[in-house]
Image 1 (spheres, rainbow, N blue to C red):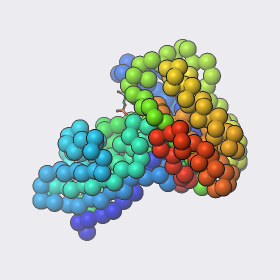
Image 2: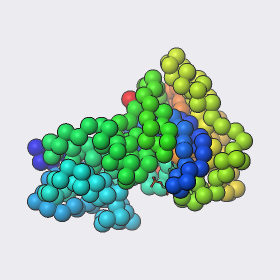
Image 3: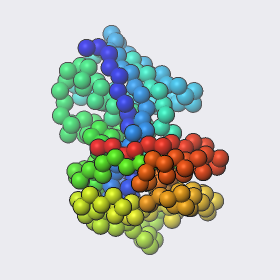
Length: 285
Ligand code: C5P
């Protein structure tokens, strides 16, 4: 086989807690991460040489700055694969949204190259390579419902959430991940997610128990205007019947979890006017 087509799934943070600032410039995290059906579509084809990438978004670089190229380089350095690869990415996941779009692409490159070249690297090795490219890549390599600690690479399998209707809203602004981390003061975090309670709710199969515990400490560190907008979107999601709502990652995407497809659709329609993009998706194992 020399060509493959794969979905690169987005993630949402069911919870996000920052435990400590580290000496290496990163933070120790404690988060429950969940894959969703919203995805980019990738095609990958082995070639004689070089790494090529093209996307349907003119503002995404197609050179070494592209995280998919970085992932391919890391794979080649590890395995010694000396041929090339041509990658096409149809982006649907909004960029810089807290949905792990770039990380999902990078993880899919690692998985795809592993399959195409027959390298048979283990998931652990792919996660290790992924971490060298970005903190959320290891989770995207495996997906599902996981507790993520350390930078995000210490992954613990949790009871899967299953398929829950999810509305994902991308507001008209972006949040820079490094600058929001820089603004965060761990000592000033007043409210934290009930991560243990969420894990227990997952074990009981109690979707509502999970949904009422979704929480992200970064919401309290957003600039006022952005914080107000996130609150407003969450308000509309909740008024439309969401069991719970939260910002994902460092934002600015906000999601709500719904009991029924009808409620999710109603919420998506209510928000379509004030968000840049609204997606109706599902969580997925
Ligand atoms: O690893 P990644 O490239 O996704 O991280 C982007 C930036 O986010 C880092 O440079 C760092 O400022 C911040 N970050 C952090 N702690 C983490 C993950 C990311 O401080 N666990």
